[in-house]
Amino acid sequence: MEYCISDIHGNYDLFCRLMDKISFSDADVLYVAGDIVDKGADGIRLLKLLFSLPNVRVVLGNHEHVFLNFYHNLIRESDDYELVLDKLKGFFADGELLDWDTVGQLDDLPYYIETDDFICVHAGLSVETGKLTSPGSNSINTMIYDRAFKEPDVLPEGGKCVFFGHTPTWYLTGGKSEILFYPRKGAPKNSRDVRDYCKIHLDLDTCLTGVLGCVAADTCECFYVKGR
Image (tube, rainbow, N blue to C red):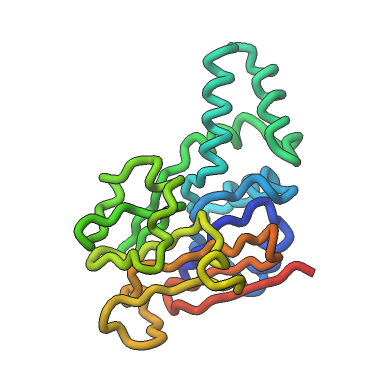
């Protein structure tokens, strides 16, 4: 089974509960659409867990990108690596867990991942004349910062389904924290085929709502856990 999730934001315990709920195993693959760190207390702990799992694939979110900009600026100013790492540790609530291996893995993250059936990206992709553009033609700003893709009337024709986060779905639902599906024109109602959707919006603003969820891309089934 393939699962997609976004904007976990350091909620390590909730993430582990969600993985238990879906019985995540070595036979599954998890795609994480960015923003693993910040807001919650256990961002680095969560990163190290995700990076340790060979069947987890992560794309860069804007919060990771901000950290990497901070890192690159520091490393340009100083070749004292011990001092730089100490400053980097101060960036996170659990920064004492940060090491150079984790920094390097963060620096290697892609801006998107494309499979046979879907694309996983943090903020979204550009749409031109109603058509989804290819991920490789998009700017970094569009893929990790731009908020235009979230709009309900942005329903690209053609292309693959896009899993994305970045903006909490409750902005669009009037306060309800749920994963949003945007079907293609003429698609069957409540289809369980991911190809029948042009986009699926994942960000549940977990640190505020206490809700974390993911989607099984194979069946379009949603799974949720809520903080105690």
